[in-house]
Image 1 (spheres, rainbow, N blue to C red):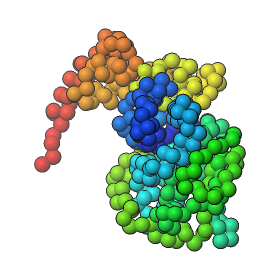
Image 2: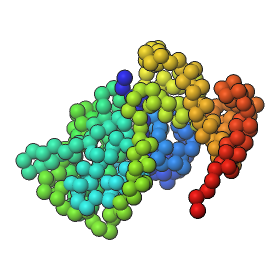
Image 3: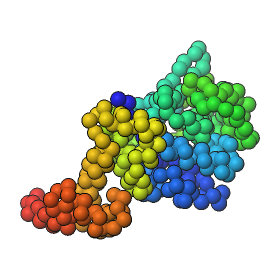
Image 4: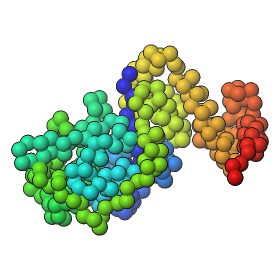
Length: 343
């Protein structure tokens, strides 16, 4: 079964920062759509793609900014994409930067893929969201803006693409930002892309903007935390995000997965699981992880798991493990104290 699409928080945080600069508060809207409040401070946290899409599209409509993604991208750099952006920005040439995007996107966004198409002396840098993924005009525009900004590091700050394709549908009104110049813009295409002269791919990126490469341990840890590629594991990541947002009902989970409740429960049933069983499993897993940190209080854990108070959490934990969370934490601390320390 196909995994539920997930994306790192870094990209949507660029939208949140921009909206803050124009006086549009985002915290209420962020939580209203079901996004984890912790993700506002953790750019590598995984979020359901469908909720990220809903947030940026609703904010664009509410603010009356049809080209919000373009404006956000124009004021950002690839560094706004966290570790994904760092891997791209560490490249020496433009071609290597887009190759890094192609190779590393699976660890950033499970719904997207990148590639380059060559046609004589031209090249098209393409990004496509997989079939069935929620459409996002703002994500398309944000991608185009960042692609263009990246090309400018090799071609000069006044470079503009000759042609732009957008995967999203519908009419489009762009203000004159100077970013796209006189580019021919086509909507409802198979991909989102920009066209550029092929020779630019061999040009070096401006050394003043090149970022240090992520260390091997950093990159390895990031890859290990990539969006899962199987259905059940991706649902577990989705539920972890929803639990932090206080959304534990099956309707919220189905919406975040981009399905009807009936389809969601049917697909879960095909794996031999029920929603309640999966939710309990995730709560136990998160509880154990949080209990390993001594300074996290019981009420903090309870609220993070969607319980109204510590007593409800304690009763649930005893049902799962036949012990209380306090007793479990004491056992962990005792085991840690008895573990020999290397010299």
